[in-house]
Amino acid sequence: MKSVKLKKILPIAICLMALVSMTSCNRGVGCPSDFSINKTVVEKAVETAAIVAKKTVQKEILK
Image 1 (spheres, rainbow, N blue to C red):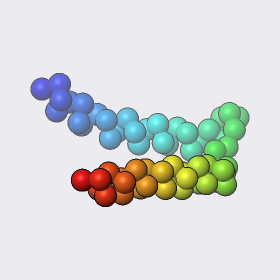
Image 2 (tube, rainbow, N blue to C red):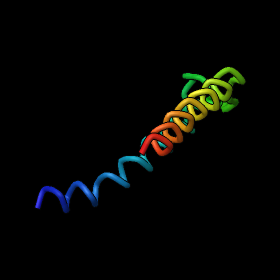
Image 3 (cartoon, one colour):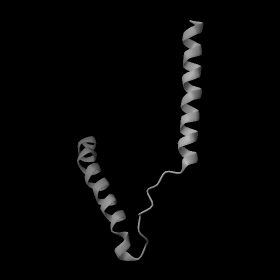
């Protein structure tokens, strides 16, 4: 019963939070307009993916 209620309420709550965050400009809180990704974040993600791939390949070779 609680799971069903949660499944019904969760999407509504997420939509409500998104709506409130997008209308924060009108309330003087600040506009959420900077959606850019920093280059270092992308570089770190690529580096991490390369390390994981290398370890996976090494495990497959040692089998």
